[in-house]
Each structure stands twice: as structure tokens, then as C-alpha cells.
Length: 414
Image (cartoon, rainbow, N blue to C red; front, side):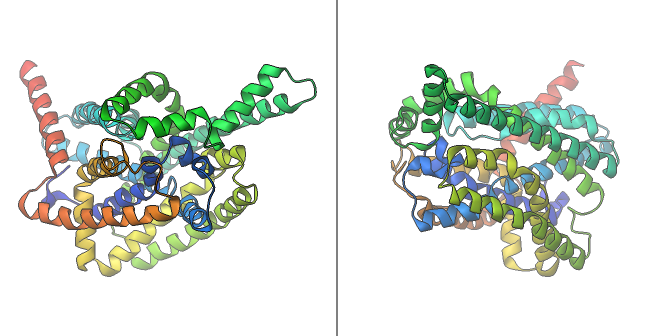
């Protein structure tokens, strides 16, 4: 993170909105079994309020805030490299060192707190994004959409294999083990009584040691297998963010009317098909394959315009109200994005996990916004107060200090 004097206020506001928006979507993964993040029925019968919360999250938030955060990460890479090179240092090496330490932060976050970490993904994908930093905006956009296509093909291919499995399992004369295996897989996504879901309640309702050992086991057998389902779209959004920075979009230099037109068009393109998908899922009574397919694959093409639409809408508000106190508070949240991201995990784990208040599995979807809004309030209060005394957040300071120390060791050894 850079000192406040070298910050771009528009990007700080975007980053603040993104880190708060990510919590809206992540709250279900803190409060309920992992399966409920993809299929809400896995947590039990749904009320109208539960369905309403899920619908809003699916249509407007799921994947869009992470996409916005990825765009900003890609743009920040360019800013860091430019700043280092203007000071006569190796910008790419500085980014590699920062990525290495970010991976360490993410690994600690994953093992010690929460399985949904994105920092390790950003660290690894960011190294690949270094290959594209010298490209012009149009080339960056073209490469971004190639990676978006790769992501869609991976996810659609996976869902296609599940449909093929289901067809084979229900075909006349199907082998008993195939039918039983498919039925068990479907139950593991949708039946609250399934052993896989029940074990989540037991683990996260228990003590810290059990949760830690579970995360160690997850990292060893699951983390790498999930990487292909998130790496390509993350890289695509990073490259899109680089292009948007080079075009002046992310810096707030466009006219307010330009941002408004962009937001309006993007939401029109994205929200209508997302509403149709949501209606299809609800009408299917949250059929596991319908829900999982829509969340992973079928909604992805519309996530792209919606992510850009959110960025344009936020920047439209920023250009019209940049001097409002609320903008300063959101910008402070963005300047402390890493601290707020990690702090949110600590805050939510302390509320829901067994080593804290033990509310895991006891809060329905319809009540989750209360916890999100409370966390937002904490972010909006503590971030400006901290910024009045310190240039960097605690996590940002540690990250920068470790990276600078490592850089200095390399220079001295060279």
C-alpha cells in the first residue's frame, strides 16, 4: 500500500466498496456450511426472507465485488511498478516480493481463520499478470476476454460432466455404484442431514484445534483442485483493471455522465439475464445441479458487465459527491483494505465459530445482513480514526515492511 499522499481517491473509494461488498457475499460462508454458499438449501428449508437475501446476493453481489477487487489489484500492480521504476528500482522484482509475502499472509489466513481466502489466489495469479503490464489497453482487454472464455469453458465443462454423470446414473440398467455415487453427490449439496454437511456443523461448532486441523487437511487435498475454477477469471479481471487504469476510467477522470451511461448500459445487459437465472433456480426449488451450474458457469458472462457497472456507478457517485464525509470514510476503508479484509474474517469467525460465540448454523440467510451492516459500521468508524494517526493499516504496514526488508536483503547480497 502507498502512503496517503500518493493515493488515487477514486480507487480508494472503489476498493472500500469492494471490500465491504465482498463481506456481503462471504457472510454465508462464515455462518453456514461451505455447501450453503453454492446451494442455500443445504442449510435447511428456506423462508421468503432467506430466498430474498439469496436472490439479491446472487444477482447483484456474487462474484461482482471480487471481480471489482481483482480489477483494482491489477491496476495497483501497475502503480507499484511505475512508482518503483521512477525511483530507480526494479518494479517487477518488487511486485514478486510483495506477492510472495501476500501468499504467506493468505496461507496464514486460510489455516488460522477461514477457508475462503483470496490472497493466495491473488499472489499467484498476480505473478502471471506481470507478463501483460506493458500492453496497451485494447490488447489487455482482448487477453482478459480470452481468459474469461477459458474460465467459462472450465466451469461449463465441469457442470457438463455432472449432467453426464446424472444421465448415466438414471439411465435404464445403470450400474448400482454409479447411481449410488451420483445420489450421494447430490445429497452432499442439498441435504442438511448428509454426513458431509453435518460434519461441517460439528467442526465449526467445536474448538479451535479441530478447525485448524480441518483447514490443514482442506489445504492439502482441496485447495489446488479449486484453483482452476478461480484463476482464469481472476487474471482476466486483473488485466481488465490494468486497461481501465490506463484509459483513466479507474482514476475518476471521466465525466460523471460517461460513468452514468456506462453503469446504466452494463446493468441493463447483466441484470435481466441474472433475474431470469434466479427465477429458474427458485422455480426448480434450488435443484442442486441447476443452482451449482448457474452459480459457477451460466451466470459468469453477465458477471463481467455487472462488475464494470458497479465500478461505473460508484465512480459516478464519487464524481458527484467526492467532498462528502461518507466518501472520505469509504476511502479510508479502501486504504486499509487488507486490514479490513483480514479483520472481517477475525470478526466473523469470532462470532460464528465454536471458539467464539458459536453461532455457526444458527443464523438464517434473512438475518445475515444485520451482521454485515454491523461490520460495515465498524469499518467506517475505525478506518478513519486509524488513518488520522497512521499512514498505513496494521496489515498494510507489516506487508510493506516485510517486502522492503526482503528487497533490501536482495540488494545487499547482490
